[in-house]
Length: 274
Image (cartoon, rainbow, N blue to C red; front, side, top):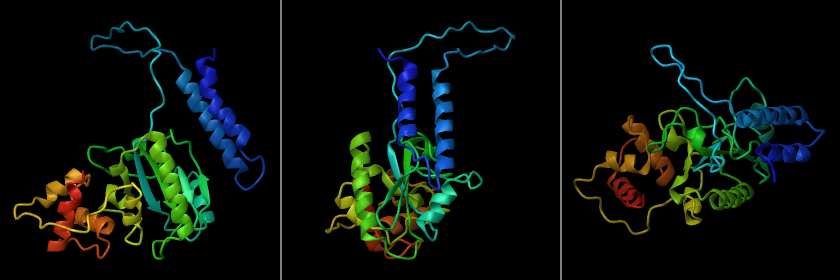
């Protein structure tokens, strides 16, 4: 029977076996494995919590390992563009300590997928953000960076790889359709990626997020746009920013903070899907 230690270290052994011994990222691959081993050692600790009460007395405690547990799994996918000039530049950024940023996947314009972090580990891609009641985005999401500077259309090969990857992630982790979102969606006051050139309608057609119907009914006179945005997931503490983020994702004609009648109709249609 395999021990817990063996089960925890098995993925690391596989990473080590599959990691290239040579090449430009040999050194950072080694650091990755070393850090993963440290996390595995932390998971194997069976020392109990030590708590002192207000009188200075140590509370009695004992470790009793449960047999019912597994690894935490992601429940959101957040899509970004890199805003850099090449995939090589992004890979360099994500393998340096100083920038303090990372992602689980980077997809090049040619469609090549760079898997940079185990899906069960926490990447540093979301920063300060919120989606619905989730305030620690990094702890519950997978971050995907697309090699794009934000000024040009996304390459067909890149989008094809993205769709294939999203299908894998959705099936593997049972991620809800509504939980495929963009960086601007979770941080509307400070981010604009993946931008109005990103094909959200195509993703929705494939089951990754929602899109408005072709035939729209008029939003009622008493339609609460703020409440609708919050129900979808947006942080409306900066209402104008939330409107701009919604329009960049679901309308993609302009990102002004004003809602026209058509914009309101689209918002009314979309929010009913959530």
